[in-house]
Length: 143
Length: 291
Image (cartoon, rainbow over all chains, first blue to last red; front, side, top):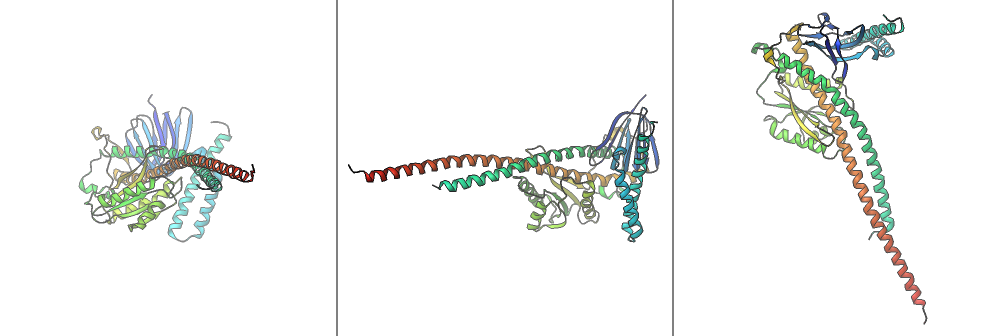
């Protein structure tokens, strides 16, 4: 059966690269995209969220903040504005960022700062959700 | 002939200097390696982005559709803007003067009939542009060795604004391209309007666009500009450290040579002094001879 090759890059580095991938799940702007081998050529914008890469019975999790994905000839290329692997997430920093964002959301009235705080809060919440799930999975019994 | 004491003092000061240049050489060498890595690790994104843009070239756009993408709009060039990327510091041999000479050449021959608006990135360029009374519309200094894309965005938004408002009809980017450790070449590239890379349009892949081609292209185009500027800044950092390393190595070598010459001069002077003293003593002894 055909396999996918998958690459996730940001302007700063190559975050993830793998061959023989069975499925990629990405947060498309219009809804979650599941990409299997022999997918039609596609270019889609991404919203902030989780990218999951399935390879055999192993699954890698990454977090992306905006960007887009191109699928062509069983090659999946994610060009993210910023991204990190789930295992790179710094949970303590995310908690601090969330608390700081909540404080400024309560106190700020200026529209720009509110929007910034809101965006920071979303980012932190996403990091926490994915980072904590990863921690649970790795400390508990393997699936 | 200078006295032995003077020579000794000079030897000491040249030695001290060579210790400093040696230290700077080593610091620059280690930072250079990291800066080079960053240049290479940023490349895949730029290349993929260019590929995607090339693939999109198969998307045939009519004139009215083109009008929806102002960043692609070719206009008659009356005035241009130039983003000048330079290091913040000197002691880099000929690097900075090569960049600035290229800037002068650009202003004289490649800008439109009106002198360009300039955006200065890096202190050396800013100082030069202010000194030569160019119209500096924005300056960005001390981005550091590891700028992030977020640091670059304000630079790009100034340039894009100038272009979209019709103040300028093209934006160029000038930076020292990092060829290798010994060679850095000042390069000028056009970043606006975006020249779409050639795609293999012949294959005519039918892409599915989500949400639609227009939104996708509108997202990709600004990023393409950003990443070009970002790469230029990274290359500037790498160029800076390699030029500095080479300049400091030359300085260290020269200092060593100078010390050798001075050592020789010192020995000669000492020898001359001893000869002198011996001559004086024997002359004195001769004076007391009574035979």
